[in-house]
Length: 136
Image (tube, rainbow, N blue to C red; front, side, top):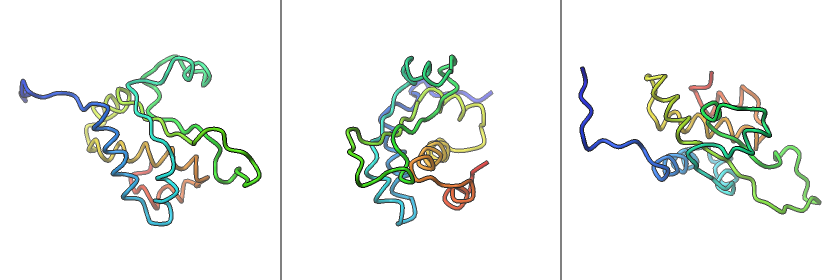
């Protein structure tokens, strides 16, 4: 049986945020600048009102969420009152990572982030697969 060191701690919010920023930096150049303009919010779980708005009850079921207007629907004539936000939820991400057991945490954070960026950019599954070879 593998022993977990007594000094081991679960990855915290700041580590997940660092991994998300590294994922943005690793994007292909045409997307990197636009993705850098999106606000990243890292929380342990989705807020209850967010889960309710999505018709979800299990807080572990949501690893990430894009909140904003996709670029394909934006107009320069539309005022922007709030920045686009990508939410990443640490505890559900960690649970999925532990359940999978076959990918690194960085790979999973990148995967969740790219999926949420797909909503922002209006990417197809083929577009996502070119950027995230791990796409299912």
